[in-house]
Image 1: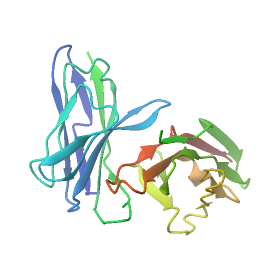
Image 2: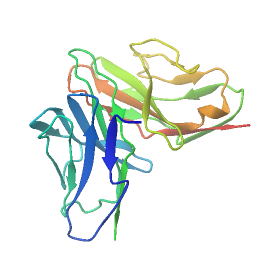
Image 3: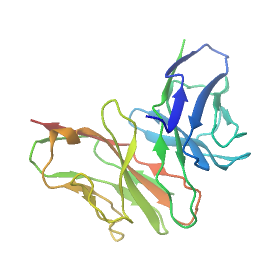
Image 4: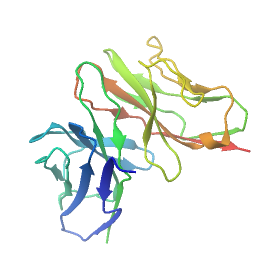
Length: 115
Length: 111
């Protein structure tokens, strides 16, 4: 189904290389999020954006960068500064409504591995 | 510090048995609590939220502020309930939409 599309599904990175994970949504949601999922640690927030051209660091932003030039798109770059990038990355989006947290809708994820 | 703890990594029950997935949180304000579920080969999706006070697929969860808990319960487990379950907290005052997730519990319902 549509909604949130993450690509690619699998990605391999060489040492010292930056890679960019794509996240696109057609739900007309204002807010978008990037999480990292490691076994036994749940989901940890990397970056989030509540509106176009604005984003904030989450709990584990070091070694990552994002941009939000369009409402539909929130790409995540894993830089060479991220020393342990092997993980499963999930993108999510949600509408914004004052006073009540809206449920987040998730993509299928991208699995990043180091070569 | 804001934190969500799911003490069980794996919960294994037989079909028809009651299920309780535990969730405890640490937050000084008024949180919003959620349960998300990920079935095999499907996306992570919302199961229920405490403000809705509804039962979804036979599951219920009650927010207990005294015990800072939001346990997920179902009286009779079904095989199709086998999945990974995440408890999540949104700091009610932040209005950022951010969620803090627990470590997740895998529910295995045996026939």
